[in-house]
Length: 455
Image (cartoon, one colour):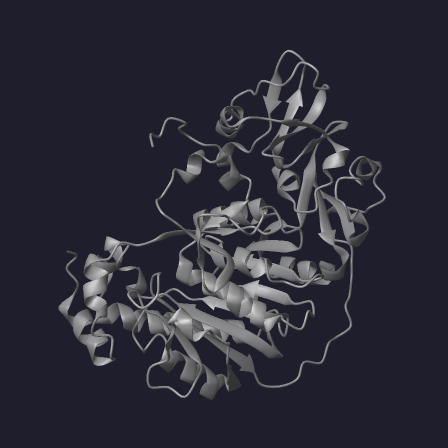
């Protein structure tokens, strides 16, 4: 039995969640994954679906995900089931099929970003942001593996993002919180809890929302969420946003069988995930539509400073790398060749003038002399043109060797030069076949450290 702070028990009992402490003290968290429907079929026999996410499934045990090549291919994401509700929220908000510009402002490690990606109508773009450097690096890796070509990853303070006035149709703010919803799976969440922590989180949350509000277009939606139970960080924060900043509560339709708890003592539409009532951990979500009507401004497009234009002869070598390259602008920054959607170049340039952009679009490769070394970003891209490469499918043992950074054994008949490795028919990464051996091109920082991790 896990010992919970008496003050916490008293607090949740007072707001009507008297059974919650027992569940948090003794319950065992579930393991769940969400499939990348652009890389993996949606229906998996024998797995129990997550009710509010058509591509989410519960597992009966926690496997060694690190030793599953499909995990590194971005064919699925390991995500707590309650958090998958963001998929349902986003799917509801974009149901009219109109392209959106989306900001996930507190995005690491990437679960909500990748869930949002899978709902976006054609022509949309998403910006995933994280301020802490090591968490931003993890976010970048996960976004690249998911393979959505119209994505940008930034490392910025929300104050700087707020300088991008009326820039986004939807802002997702999964704000830092007191973490009460994680108490069942994280002993640290129990140890750090205090009433003082809640006060600190409330102040920080309000500062973040104030910063981001300017970047949200009039008529746009703020998706606010926490993984905590107290009303201060949840219902009271929603009321504060609506009353002080100007917005209206948005209803998200939910099925009664999902057992999602409504907001507590509030007139606004709020959605609470209570362990013991649902199969998942604690989560709070609410959507607010900003008052007003957005008046679009004329887009201005300038060639990025320090980049070569799309007339460079080098670019002719990569024009067949994506299946829909006509929709992308190609450019070279230093030695890196990038393809980015033409429709959102103005957004990218605006971001680069304000914040640190650490990934954009699809990195096609790096220039080394007269050669272009293909990037892992290209291998993971959902619109990769596999026909432009020699391919070699490898078994699991060879796939894991590749992910570990080792040389891979290729069939003797494999052509020399750049080879796209596949596993189970899906892209894994690139090697350079020299005939007697192959050079592994998998990113060093992403490599599996240990192959012998037991069962």
